[in-house]
Image (cartoon, rainbow, N blue to C red; front, side, top):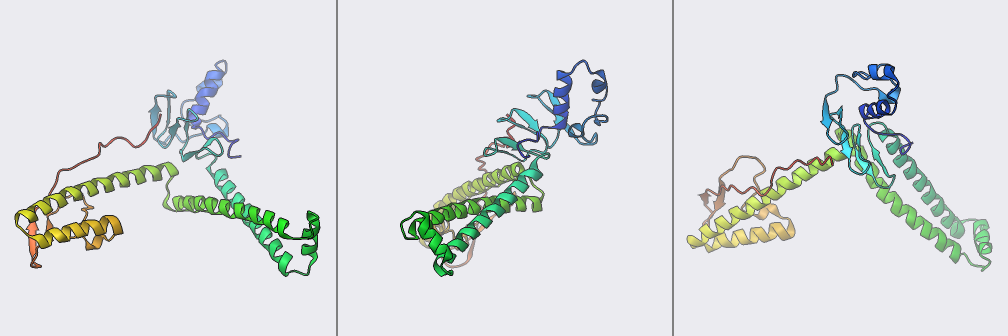
Length: 282
């Protein structure tokens, strides 16, 4: 059902149908916006904000996104699944989620059966062991156990990967996000983190140079050790300098060699990113 259902924006579906059936004037008259008289897959809310897709040349929903793989606008675009070779959107996302749940349950049952059979061969009443020995006619259970062990390994690997995907989508549903929105937000956080780290490197160079000018070797040592502990060990709390997570440029108070505070103004105007639009509709 996930691959069978077309997740395209209903406005796009209706526009394509009208273009392919120009002789039906009734359908053209009912294409004004609310979808009255249309099939259920063509219905949309007239209050929903829209925007123009210049590729499809149709006004689509604000949450719709043009998929470059399918070359169509998908209603409430979530992601393009390369395994199913289809986009996942509002129309087929419930079936996509049920597919993940069903496959996870199937893999879990298969893994449980393989484990139960292996245990029964060695710990059972002997019936399974006898059938295993007669299976290949080698009078040993090793070939059967090896085959079941290989299938069990594949089941556990697949269950682990699919389980991570299932948990990821459960978190997305809890947060009310789509996969696309999560990726955009995650990329934004990464860019912000990179900008803060670059800003920290510049402030560190300025602070080290100022400490060297003051011949404060203790402070230079602290700054160098703090950089090494932050970058190699992830111990940011050991660093005299901290990343500014806010948008304001704060004055960093750097302790000097005597343990007192040296109010060093380390504001910087470094901005390594070009605020390009994260949403790629092409």
